[in-house]
Image (cartoon, one colour):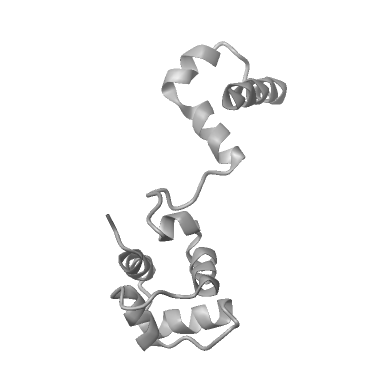
Length: 121
């Protein structure tokens, strides 16, 4: 299982941020206190845990969910309803089912309504 510190470090490295750059970005995201590179280093080593306001800053900055940061899921962020529908519509197995439908806006709206029914069940 990946620790909070490991996830924080991976996120920083994924954007090629230095500790200094991230400290500056997080300080502007989290207004409750100044963040420095030493503090970030301690978070990444799991020596201390960041405040919730800082975690919110990470979520916003890296477009991830708090559940991802805390290791409750490996999905960085849940899909929006639109993204879920697009994935459904592009699924090759589902394509056989609606292939005969014309690709006009009205048909896509009907398909969307059908998808919502499946999703509810």
